[in-house]
Length: 326
Ligand SMILES: NC(=O)c1ccc[n+]([C@@H]2O[C@H](COP(=O)([O-])OP(=O)(O)OC[C@H]3O[C@@H](n4cnc5c(N)ncnc54)[C@H](O)[C@@H]3O)[C@@H](O)[C@H]2O)c1
Image 1 (cartoon, helix red, strand yellow):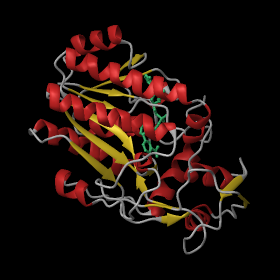
Image 2 (cartoon, helix red, strand yellow):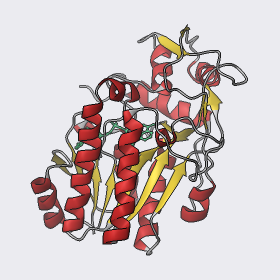
Image 3 (cartoon, helix red, strand yellow):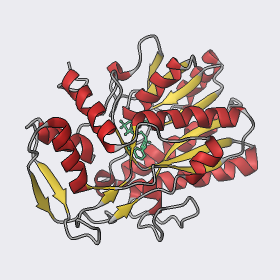
């Protein structure tokens, strides 16, 4: 039975669709293309352009395709934008997300994989961060994801919805076909590579953090490893596994300076940067404790070392110099 992938024209969603197809799964994609790219959806995949909160459209898709489960990527995901325009985030991520889950339940679809985020931890009390770490987001984006987590928990208790909420750390990397093309781009790795191509100036936000080189440390996960975790999560639910919140990180962090150093080696470019003040709400260190992903899902990152991430993303950019734009 087919899987409904919302946000399947976006970065992580498109790679997950690619991997699902490779595993022989049937997939239907729903994306409003607000931030996604039609070209990113694998050929032959049934595509619907629309919003996840459109109950009539989602009901029609569920009925037409006898959907078994939903993998829900569709969301707005820029921290800065969420600070300036929180309404957009609560309406798109929470209101639309809750409408989607309600429509699924109404049609008897009770398996749900949700893209959550390490931003739900805010400034974590503990590093590496276990799933039991208190969650207190420091921006509306993180809150919008945490609110959906709470909805999922209540709907499991009351209606038997079974879910896996995957709290991603920093997604990066590419496959041959699909890569990261956001406009505007707020993530470090694509911005470092744009600077290597001479297309943009690179800003380094904060060099006085309490870390060995003074720059912020993040846990980077290759998008292919992330995608594969969704397939394991679906199989967990198919096997009758219970609902879980699970971190997806490697347990190893790289500083901003280390990312730039590795990118210099991969690209051969100098990659100049300008130091700017730290951004509010940017914690010094976000590194996952990934033990639960391994014990519950059997997930182990395979290609999430920084050189592999950077090489794959660099190769994709060389082949797609303007991303998905024609
Ligand atoms: N990229 C990361 O490092 C990261 C880290 C943690 C969590 N996440 C989460 O993972 C998910 C995917 O992230 P991404 O980087 O691939 O983002 P993305 O913007 O590339 O993809 C999101 C897709 O969802 C679509 N979309 C948004 N709202 C929609 C709606 N209401 N109805 C239909 N389609 C809608 C967009 O058009 C886009 O194609 C998001 O939920 C994000 O919050 C991403």
